[in-house]
Image (cartoon, rainbow over all chains, first blue to last red; front, side, top):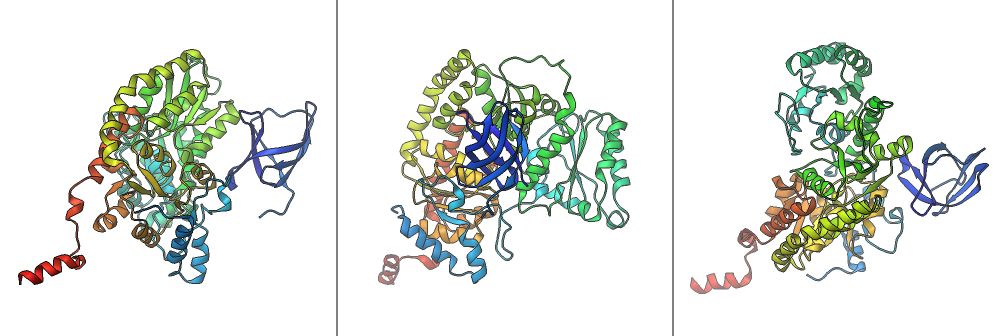
Length: 74
Length: 493
């Protein structure tokens, strides 16, 4: 359950940063990304998958949220 | 010597690794790589930020070095207590040349060493009482100090002293910030964790001090310079450029910086990060909490300076953008003259670097401006995100080495035969004795500044006077006299 710092980059894409792993990746897709629901499965550009508990509204980026790693990793 | 091809470089790495026992070889192989610009992510080719192997010569420091030496130490109007035995503070005192303005011992304390000088009884009975006493002594002797930080050395963590409680109590008594920093040397694999701990201490104990206080008048052009330690005056050479383009520099972190500047940083509009490795943590925190965007910039060499000034200006309105162009134009004659003078003397020379923080990638542009080529680079304590940023800066088939050992570095140099090496004091005399020109790139070999346009002129002069120094022709080992001279001796006999 890593803490993930999320922010939007200049192109408006979601950037995913895990401080302890120095992992800085752009998110390719977010399962729920509408004004009234955000979260679910997030796929990063390196192929790894994380899961966020869906929120009722778009979070105010940048923000730190807890995520669950879906694939087993390295 | 012609540049090595990719295969030759790979073979060189294998050859160098051969001497290690199997386990060590497997581990070290992950830290050495041939650069491939087509890679997007460094973790495909190099591993970093791992514990050094026992038995090899590493050049890394400790968490205390990262916190006291790098992040906290340069804050000039605070007193930084090296809490623990006397050595850590004394042997690192004033070595980093973080210049500052002020009267040392009166209102600034940068080059002084304050320590709690732990003795056996402090280890046995704990040092909290002593620490409390020191705070009162400091207040009596140095009443103009603006705050105190407690930089833990190893024993503090080992014996479990509660420095936080002492700090909170002292904070109430003297009514100034008192910051306990848990930067015991044994934490982490290098000084890098010390930077992180120091950043977190600033976040927890200092940054919020002026939340809700709007008495500080702000402008739309407020910026903070973060991660510039004013080595040899670097931050001053950077600051003048930013001010000339119309920005207001509110805070310098932490070279020539004050605690008041740090407390005011949450009020700025943009954070400018020079040393990404040591201060990105606090920038990311301020982005999240205060919604202050941050950007990385690079003030080494005119190409990168112009690029950075334009990038910084793009976050502001037209007046600043025009200001940036004005600054670039103003200094053009100056830096063109520097390049015209030194490029012919340095053209085509090859450089190997091995330093820490931002320099393994940031100074590449400055060397390229002088027509030189960086053929090998590496970080003492870099992480993967540093190498991500390095791959694009370095040429293909060049060497990249992480936490390189003394042996590996020497062997690489013997084969690559660079014309100049830039690394630290521990490497300096080895390579000078091998007859290779060397610059100590941690504190600019007692020169500087190297940042900004003013710094570039000094950088170019220093590289020239080192590389083209006639002394290198005199260095010839007596057992390496060539055959022709032997023949000459025989003939004359």
